[in-house]
Image (tube, rainbow, N blue to C red; front, side, top):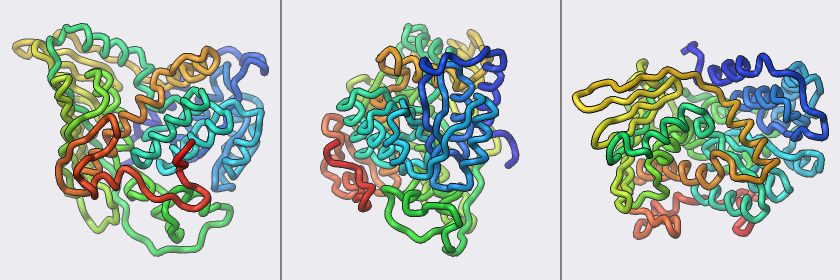
Length: 425
């Protein structure tokens, strides 16, 4: 598919928002950032940070060395100063001039980079999902608290004005008593077919790229787009785009941990691909203390959108329901009467600005890592339900799955030497 994806849209709208920005702050007032991971999402986030007057991108870091100089030039064209190019994150963390790191790597590096960043005295902006498994983000949160660092999760909707307005509406009681929310992900994803293992491309540090993941031979499908669909590195689309909308649903419902999880999922679009994660997924989460349920629905073979939104959230109340997505929000009342239908624009700029502001003020960011951990945890639990093939209960106090040894084991994985997730941060 050649249509613009949501990230391209975010980047273009962010650029439009900043088109009238005037100059940079004085160097001493700018927050010095290192962008870690410069492909895809990292490219867009880094350029948007470079456009902000209160920030300066001083370092770009990626395990694929040939990508660095061209990207550094892109940054320089925006902010008029050229960042340093670094292949190993550990060298960035050793540089005392860096105030914060922006983690846009594949998922399996998110938590360890966050932990290392906090331990090195850096604030962290980390893309979602914030971990490859539940233990990783639990430890990342412990590091953020121990070292008193600002850690913002890259679920940008938390800072967007119309989302905040919509959540206030949900909590105002105007929908009546809200009994259920549904988060969905309906889009057409391309499939990943198999290729043979091959030599590591020149300039790519394959050992660092694998990081906390099990050691494997180089394969283009692991390194390129395909990594998202393998459990070693990704979390499927429930942990990719799904976390955005799970986070909004959880935010609106005001819930933390579910007590029961039931997943029905499969691969319906199988056509010789090698993907491990499901393309079709329906997960229910029960929160009996709050008397609400959360439903997640995913279809990665759909060339159409549900309720007008490729990814969205619905809140169902006793008097009305709300549909909420990146392009706006609508409320429908009794007798299916549309009470209002607001069209909105979306940009991730407010979320980046919130991160920078919190570094200076010390306040918790719009999506603090604690919320990022809990929302990502929903994706992990849904995926565990698929992998074990049965429902289970969850204990939020201990963050364990009692009475199910196989399911509980998937909350954590063994480390790889040199890249272990520490038991004590």
